Amino acid sequence: MKLAILLTSGVGSQDARTVRKLTEAAREQGHGVGIFFMDDGVFLLDSMKDLALGGAELVACAHNCYEWGVGKVERPEGVLFGGQQDWAEMVQEADRVIVFG
Amino acid sequence: MAESKKRVVMLVRRSPLNTIMGAEALRQSVGLTVADLDLTVVLLDAAAWLAVPLSPEVIGGGDIKKHLDTLPLLKARVVVESQSLERYGIDRDRVRKDIEVIDSQEVVSEITGAQAVIAF
Image (cartoon, rainbow over all chains, first blue to last red; front, side):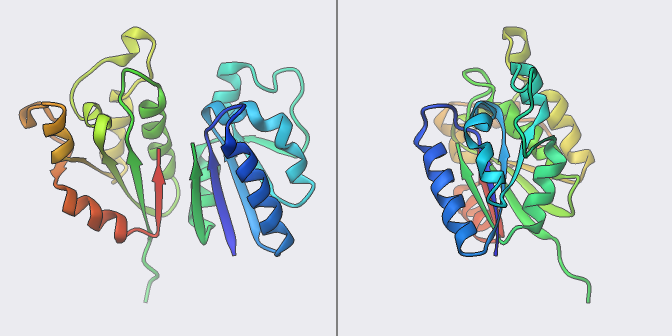
């Protein structure tokens, strides 16, 4: 099964912890996970980039990153700076869409 | 037989003036039209204010008009819940002509008929 997760919550939110645990559990069970970081969610990129090593697909809204200076100096490894079309593709291909924000 | 498009409901709940999230939901809605999806944008609760002419950009908020002008051109349907309009005292005559007013039962039908609901 493929999960598409939209994360718009910011630093300090329980959502970040929930998405992390959910992603780790889903990957352990062999499910595909794509996470799209948008709005305040882009501030979580650095702390969640390790999920890419576990096989999750991480995409950040480049528009929000540019607006708020996230990743200007160094782009977190394993994270694609993309756009809404990437999220649209994730939604289209996903079996389940989950929103945290 | 051709496979039908995935039905997606974008459920927008935020006001256009207190947060940029209402405008961001509309930006995402425009983005969703690039995929082969059957998209309906539902304006609910404080997002009912998105259905009337306002200019949040003058106070540094996100642009909503551009997105609302674009969505019908991209074959996305935009609706507003009548009960939300009533709750906020918004006259139906003020609602943009390209936004359909539906009641809460129809909102439920939209949600139950969708394969994905994105609550923003």
